[in-house]
Length: 487
Ligand code: GLN
Image 1 (tube, rainbow, N blue to C red):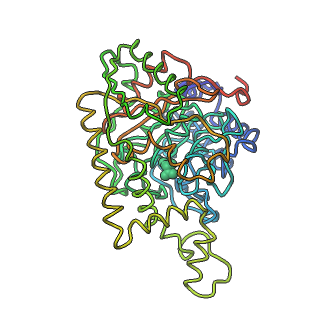
Image 2 (image 1 turned 120 degrees about the horizontal axis):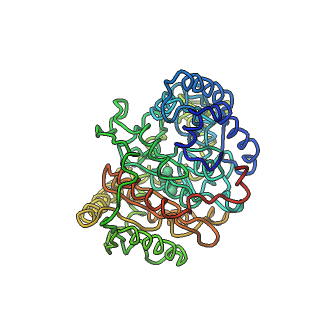
Image 3 (image 1 turned 180 degrees about the horizontal axis):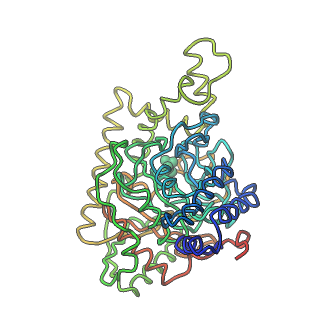
């Protein structure tokens, strides 16, 4: 069961090999068996899953089912889910029951996908290791002493250990690609504006984008098609045609021009990762692609500009959590100011406070020009680098992360070294471009992801390119021994 693609699961449901209730129970049982150890879920929604699965079985019997009907899914715990706790892995929202569904949840629910639960994450999506959660760190299924990456670590681990066949996450600066890379699953962050942000609790609104984790590109294609598209409720969602991402998966990639930026292979990159990436590129040349050396000269400015812009937007977005409207309120406030201060002081974790303080500082009068405005100008330079590169190449490839999954606790006292882990992922978000991570092999006995960066709205091409690699290799089929489970 766990090795089946979504298309195969869908066929199994239609042919009556198993029901959606049985399929959902299968994953719920795996969650019950393994999640104490992995901590990938904050909330498991068994009752809702089985009720939705029942409805899906009725639709299948009535012949009204779509391809995703009856296949269970898990959501990062920042997608609002009607009537269900949506915590953002924060004490601040520990008691917050969302009163409506995020657009993506609404769409997948309408497609008949039962929700298994809400996955663990870094608090308010701030982090690269999934250690910043009020509910505790998530463990990497390949080595329980190591991090799975963040901030969508729970969603990546759910797919990696097959606690869910597919999950949704968000990527503000790498939070889909980095945990996908560190756990050896396939993840896609679409073009900014491709997927509605409505009902997705905001971290940095000009960077946040929802996307998919699955076992392979083929599965990502199906689910991305179901969540993509214009949404009048999100003013930054783009009216752009959503192609059938599955239709072009088997197109030839003969003559494909792959740009490899030299800045992605500089100091700080683990040599063993560089080797894995070079081997993956060789595989692409065997498939008929051409490798072209390119330069993205402003790559080194991605970290400093992102870590001004993202906290600045976060400091504004998170001002709504004041103890009045949502979530946590301190005990016995003396007066209004005391209530604001203690509710926020007690409700937010350390990293979130660090971001709010940095962001507030960067936006304050007298510093705005020096930091925020400057960072926005750098952002334009970074976008221009990509624009020029895409005049010469069809797609860009490189590593996702400079290192494989590190030990839990290794970087918690050193936020700067944690931020450095984002070196290859942030620039895409600053430019609004789509990116993927696909499993490309191992280094240090841990998974290594290959990053595929496409031009705006070229997700179909990226999925095609990823699928061709996955037809020729089987890295994406490897499962951590401990969680291989029954066939
Ligand atoms: N690691 C980055 C940060 O902490 C990216 C997080 C994300 O993409 N949500 O901001």
